[in-house]
Length: 330
Image (tube, rainbow, N blue to C red; front, side, top):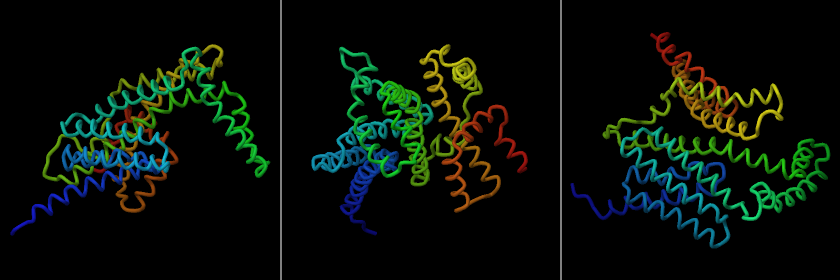
């Protein structure tokens, strides 16, 4: 049977091109921008490094063209560049059969320090402290928001939340403190979730599309991992400043210790969340729930009770839930 090789070559280039456009489209869509690296990494993992580079170039050039016509914000190009780097690093980790969790942690730490340091250098002025520089940086946006809330108040005079936010905007120092806290404490949650989701999808896609290739790690590994028992002490250590702050008041507890405690809890919380998520999926398997009912339960639980899943992950240190379910099943 004769096969037109030129047709095959055309098809192998069509898919990376298409994946590049998909990645560009995902990056401009706020709710699904978390999946931006996935098409690029998929192209590299399935079709080879060269096709992955092609996909990345198509995605980046698409955004540059859209920016030149003022259709999108130029910062999306920087986001795409970071997504491309993440995609290539993590797919290399998977290709070399390195522990994917090690890759997620390493890339996540590097990305976090890049975010914090770049934020610092963007805001910091040589003659001013960082706090004063940040106040000056947010001042134009603060004024615009105050004007917007003035208009909103007229339409919703009884909305208490509007007045609370407006009161916060009237206190630049407090607002800056919340921004610093958000970057330091909450950024790791987004970063590690972002990396975990894409790595999970790459592992799953590779398993489904390359069934003949045996690899040490697959998508199930990210659902079955268990953090070392000693990490519970890090959770306790991170909680200590907050407990002391609650018992004795903010005057006795330095702000930096609360920030460090919050940072520790957010980083550990992400990994305990996914550990608890794996246990929850195993529980649904134990109940033999499949199809649409299972999907609805997973979505509702993740959106409404992520903290419970994280606590479940911590509790798994003391009670091996999967082992318990296996025993009862037998």
